[in-house]
Length: 407
Ligand code: AMP
Ligand code: MG
Image 1 (cartoon, protein in one colour):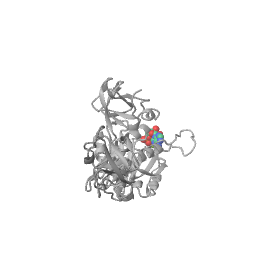
Image 2 (cartoon, rainbow, N blue to C red; image 1 turned 60 degrees about the horizontal axis):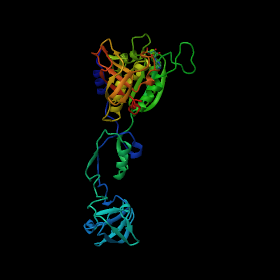
Image 3 (cartoon, helix red, strand yellow; image 1 turned 30 degrees about the vertical axis):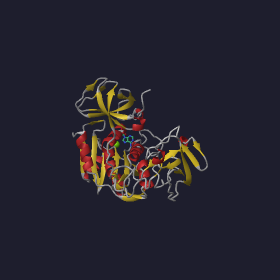
Image 4 (spheres, helix red, strand yellow; image 1 turned 30 degrees about the horizontal axis):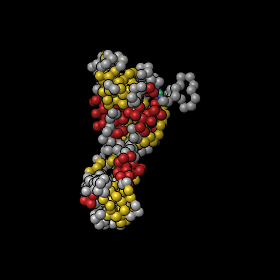
């Protein structure tokens, strides 16, 4: 048996370099950047007003007070988008809108709401104004030459906005890894259930997990326990970056994925010290890596999160390849006999004292009903046989947005 950490390291070592493509920024949402982004211009590109109001010279208003108000002649108007560089002489002001370029001779803006008295061509100021007030100086946000984004960072909505502000329309990114998904087993029904048959839950679930991890599913196939049929399927999968299968890799009589990988393809086959999800195989079909997950649905999901998800994230060029983890206080006792690392379906909540975790659902690795209540996997280390309420452990968040404050 090998450890979870070693299995993960071996899977990652088998994953090649991500592909690189140039894409319009809006077609690159959530993809990882393949190149750094360096600002080619200052933001804002010119000094401009932060408010609707009057552009003034602060020196003119140094002595302004309730008893000695200062009158300024309004000599013109600047709207956003206008370029006319209006120069104001002393004791004059320019009516200016947010985003309009500040006249070179002005150094502050008094917002409309702070001017008590104004006429068509005159305003009255009753207090001084600080130089720079309500002014957005050129380059205050970004300086040309700033390194703003690093390879492997995801194109979030904010990054797309910043790229657009910089006038960058296309970026080099790592496209989603293409994944072929295979469910195996003679018991998997093609349509309505007949005796001895079950519906394929792993195929759709793994496809959803692949998409959540940023992958693209090229197909969800079902093949019976039949070596020639498996070979035929393999021959027709087309161009993919990763194969993910479930089932057929334990010690059973008809576990043909195991036989196929052992017999014909380059293979690592391990019993991993993990609960659930012990059998795991890593093989390849030509240059394409193949992660073979166990058949029991919860075991398949847990093994996906530990081994296939990091592989997919790496194939997608992401720097962040692991699920987010938080320290939790457990609310119920947990047990873990057998020296394997246990991943327990749990519900994590945010309380005033930090995160808490409570096991949810029935424990069997074939039972999906509990998994739908879980927003996290509680990790019980190999060395911990039992833990009492109050113990601090680590949980992987499956759905960080689903972690809500306790009610
Ligand atoms: P296996 O590893 O192929 O022996 O499968 C272990 C268990 O998982 C068996 O009870 C299978 O029926 C079940 N199983 C395998 N594949 C699937 C699937 N795609 N959907 C639901 N259950 C499955
Ligand atoms: Mg099977």
